[in-house]
Amino acid sequence: MAETKTKYNSKKIELDGHVFDSKAEARYYEELKLQQEQSKILFFRLQPRYELQESFKKCGKLHRKIEYVADFEIHHLDGSIETIDVKGFETTDFAIKRKLFEKKFPHKLTLLAFSQIDGGWIELDELKKARRLRKKTKAALKAEMSFN
Image (cartoon, rainbow, N blue to C red; front, side, top):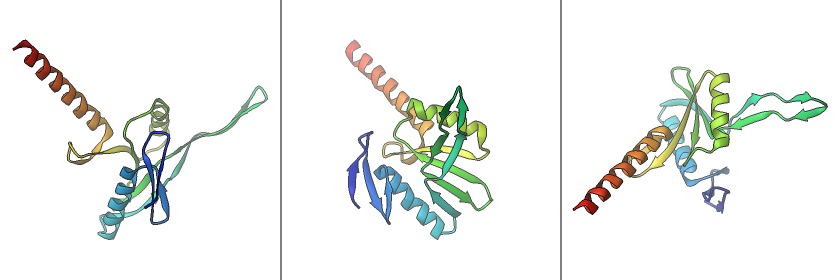
């Protein structure tokens, strides 16, 4: 596994001839390979592309299309399709792409993160809630300690 840094300070990982943007993404790839071997999913694709808005011309200027490149696309046994993105946090750019994706595509978009504290793979929205709760609890304990 070769490693290089990305713009979000994660380390790029090369595994099975594929380059992943983070260790978490490479870990999820290994999880999907196992699920496919165990016939828990039909198959999965790496870095599927979704056109969110086509290119257009306005006032003589060409505006490029807007694409979203996800981490994985899973084809489940029941025929459903799920798009997976492994994230540490959600950028403002991604929040916009997420809304555009949700409007245009019928299949489920799941944002996952790996959290040791929370028991492994967890949806990003759930992780944010858990982190807020931990922060609130810590602040309450700190306030209680300073009260005594």
